[in-house]
Amino acid sequence: MKFKGIFFDLYGTLLIYNNNSKAWADWISTFYDCLQDYGLKQSKELFAIKCDGFFGRDEPPGLNDGLTIYERRIQRLCKELSLELNNKELNFTANSCLNAWIKYTSLDPMTIPLLKEFKKNKKIALISNFDYPPHIYSVLSEMNIHEYFDSVVISGEVGVKKPDPTIFSFALEQTGLRNDEVVYIGDAPEDIQGARAAGIHPILIQRKLFDSDSQITDYWANQESNNNHQDNSIFSKVKRITHLKELLDLIS
Image (cartoon, rainbow, N blue to C red):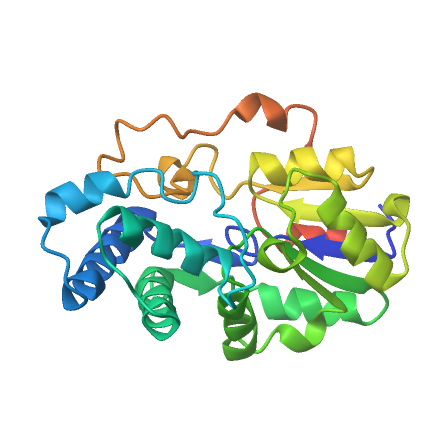
């Protein structure tokens, strides 16, 4: 395959999930501890149930309040719990929870060598569904990979998420490429659906044939009983790789 642009997803693609179950357990514990400091009296068990499907709920409306979608999600939950947090407290809570969660992710060892090689003669973009853009920029900086991207598109900034094909248009415009000149690598159904809908060639990275832990993309008090599993039929007739290094041979 010959392409002028290589677009990537971030989590589960360039970054590896090491233990999602523990990550979400630390996320809820940190969230609970933060809100206890701000007056929460509810038990941790009831609070955990209250947070079921936290990221799958409708996004709170934007109010020009200087908050990210993630912070407004926290704010909405706090109001339901009769708590009032100011913007500084919401920001602290958001960062604390994400810092607890990200400890269980790591940069794929092939990410930097791969980006260096593709940077020689191709445009590189990152397209990520994430409600808290500052976190993404922090991760890119801390892992020393921001410099490789000609375009960084985050759903929390542009107001649209994969699988909506519109999100890909931002990266296409910023790189000056057509959709038929680009390949997109991701690990989730919305990555494949969105790329296809945008007329971009999708490649699925699937490090394991079936990894239920990596499919935990939201918080659930009882992870085993939630029905938030991937519809793997979406992955039919899509090019698959099991390791990033395969892209070097696949994309010339």
